[in-house]
Length: 399
Image (tube, rainbow, N blue to C red):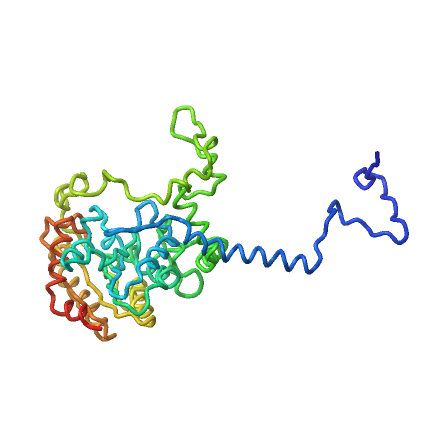
């Protein structure tokens, strides 16, 4: 039996015999430069090929009225894949926040659903490209890094003036708490909003994940199958029992993947006409409110919205902006002139950019659930008003 004297305190290691190689620690195998190159090539191939192959092997069949499920709102890789699967040149994505997505309604109660119904035989002409919790500063990042499939086609972008109702909504002032979709925000430079206070490590991770497809794919796995956790954290997740247990510790970690991408619940207690949330904004005693409107020239959200439009146009898209539908009934009487002046500024500035704009008439008060989200009947009426607008029909028919 041999003794390694280097591990014994106070004992000098024996000198190597002349002509013999000095051991390199405890490693018995070293890679040559050629072997290192081969290893790096294999790793690089995996980084490129695994996401590419996953898109072809993972079952994903978005049907009519499909929208990214609420629980997968941060699965940007799935959002990108959704756009890539709908490549017919006549299909029109509708981009926006939860107003487009449909916060209080079922998938068959959204704006895209009712526009498809009015379009006649084709029930998938208009695509629901809304994401819950999205705002212009994040939408700009989403379109830039995950919306590359939107090229050379007609696109509707919904403009929600809710993001100019206060400096806090505009993200132009420091604020406590986290920011939804923070990974999509500008991470460096003078365009970083003051409300975003992440450290350097978080910003660097966000940039890398947005530009490395392999890491975006791993984010997809965590979001879609493992409750937004890595597999080790998912395995050790505790249940809510009085005596906490680990229900996933004995589960097959591949079982969630085998079950497929989760969809929306068949009976969502939070959405649809049967939901207690699906009611007019006045049902709970709501009253008109005062808003601290942000000047457009100082608004970060407005700058980002313009950036979204300009980016889409640079990719050869024909952009139409739908301005609204904001709940004017919720604005205090003395503030309505200021609101209408700001709304007209947005319309006029977009027209100066030679962008088509539709400003639908405000919906009846009882068809709003809050400041900007319609109820099911509100979406149906909004779709009819947009469809009957002559400028919309000319835009839709033009090449």
